[in-house]
Image (tube, rainbow, N blue to C red; front, side, top):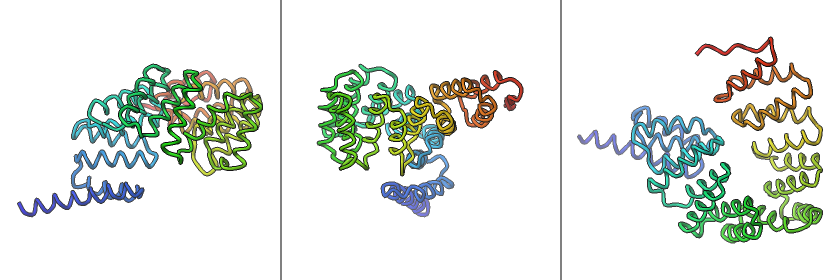
Length: 337
């Protein structure tokens, strides 16, 4: 009995050490320790749930979802597993199931503002403005000092066309967390929207030459403004600059769209193809890419790109196969299942 208690204590110590490593940002070490723990206790729901969280933070949402499935099979859904599931699904742009997961996290007892703020973001992605507004209001009521709650309220107000309301919410978020680059950029953008277009561009360029040059979100504000003013080549350049030193798939996609509008189709095609390999579930990007390549008449290039996309297409496999069949001979047959 004493030996059993000692082993249990050792397992608990390893779990606590793994959690400490995760808090320190030493995610690879945390994963190794959690996986070693699971060799002895393969159905340990806590270890599985925290392994999922580490994998999500390492940028592997699909792996995180697989580990969460094991954790919930072993110990049932908890507010923590539902929240991490929501974050993984949101990262994968699966907004409807992410919305459901955040609702579940709230129902299971998560009393922080995060699941409500993310619920609001999911609703916003699904074009449910009122649902987003309600979730954002609840997030602020729960945690008035949470910058994330005010940021999402600003996003909701901006989407609804309430520029003054957006400015007030972003100002509050910036007041709470002056280091939040996104909140600051959105505050500036909401103020600029009240100026004439040429004045907007001058103001952003002035900011970028001073304190804002390292704020990628401010660069994205400039990119959007330049696109609105019709300078698509400059917009593409700003989107490219906004992702220097980081891996920003959204900015990469936006650069591709801007290059297409600027008529730089070779560069746009290469960028869109790279984005599709990383995010094959993006229906709009897929359709835009296929249509552009057909209009250009580069069917061999399109066939090669679709063939590369096929193994990673996931739920879009049928659509990729359909486009390959339209191209005639040379389209691969689906592999046996």
